[in-house]
Amino acid sequence: MNRFESQLQTIGPAFAGLIENIPLQNRPPLPPDWLQVEMLERYLVIQRADIAPGMTVLEIGSGPHAISTVPLAFAVGKKGRVIAAERSRWGQFREVVRASGLMNSIHPIACDATSLPFRDDSVDVSVCVHGIRSLGEVASLVAILREMLRVSPRVFLAESLPIAKNDAQRAHLAMYDLRQEVFQATSGHRDDLHHLPLDTLSTLIENAGGFLERSATLDIDLPDALAYFPRTLVESIPDTKTRAGLLLRWDEARSNGERYGTDHPPVGIVTAARR
Image 1: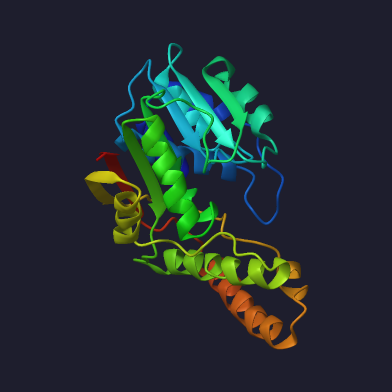
Image 2: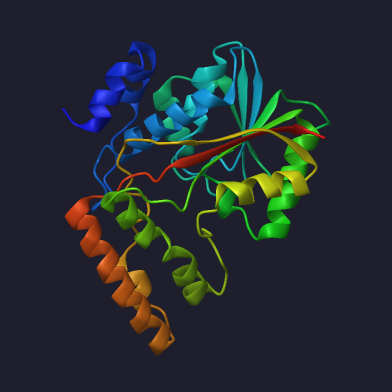
């Protein structure tokens, strides 16, 4: 029995059954059950968000696979709702939501999170799980967090931390930390920023007008292959020197990932209220 199967047995039959309905993904070299594994990780993290049945939750950055959206909908139950806010990357969102059986609790909306189309205090809690680092530079992050605090009295953030306690976590971080530089070299735009330390997450919240209620670090004993991106992307970098240096780093990171596996780094969680 692998770690995913072992943890799945501990969380109860309801969510375990839901996970089994999520379609397998054919995206080699990722394992076909990567989406189920990631969704389980989000479920374990969201349990720390104090979300109760019947709540209205705003999720910022739901992403193309509803990885956090489905566990959030499970948490609010049939009488609650999750407003899934995403700017443009919908991908397989609707397919995954349909497979989960939770469509009636999930309400997707396309919008810019720096200017949310909601009234003040219109939701119970705003959350962003493993997404803040993909939402732009610091000024944009503060603007988004300020909006989250405007539309809800509480905010919950969760992000992988730049901490490695074993070789598999180091292998994950080595590959992930290439993303920002590679994307900038190929497109001219920074994306997937390096993992933020826990004190940086707390500072962002405070700069946005929030009062830090709680911060903690969670150890998640699950694999995480999502740092991976194709070598061909690095090969497309036009600058010769930049391309050569990043190819060497990609090859080393990939070799270590194949040798040790890649695991979730510790996850930092922050809960805050409006000041």
